[in-house]
Image 1: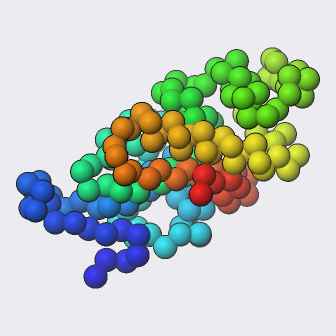
Image 2: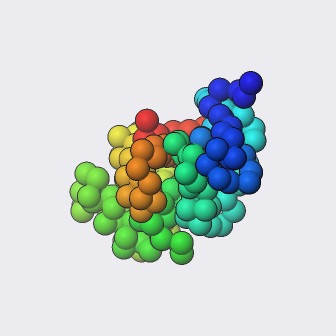
Image 3: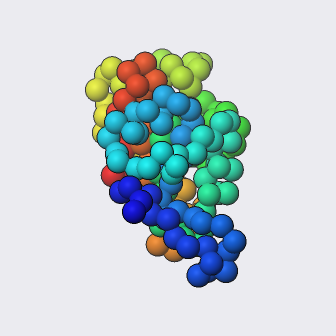
Length: 171
């Protein structure tokens, strides 16, 4: 019997030669995987490390049997998913994303020449959790639309690297 959350399906029934799972977790690093494991009971075999290519890892994980895809990642990687770009997100795109999610132009002025990673602490320590949740939801919606698999549920979990905890989720 498989542990909860990682149901193996027989590949022979679908004509495949190997077993596949119906739920996996793509992580951008061990800190994200650890944060995810603290909240979810999913078999260790269902975790995949994405490295620098979170989009490629997500796309290559989509199989006929996959029904749930979790993405657990830090700020910059979550922005890559939300903007669906394999390169480091541009500041102008990040600021545009924040504007679309309720942050005013005036509030963003101090960041017009900042590094994109300077924005996360401002949101996190400023307790702008609703905005962080909206970014996770945007990442979920973008992944579901790009991956184009019917009945695939994508869950995005934003991990604060300094605390090692999920601070926002699309659940």
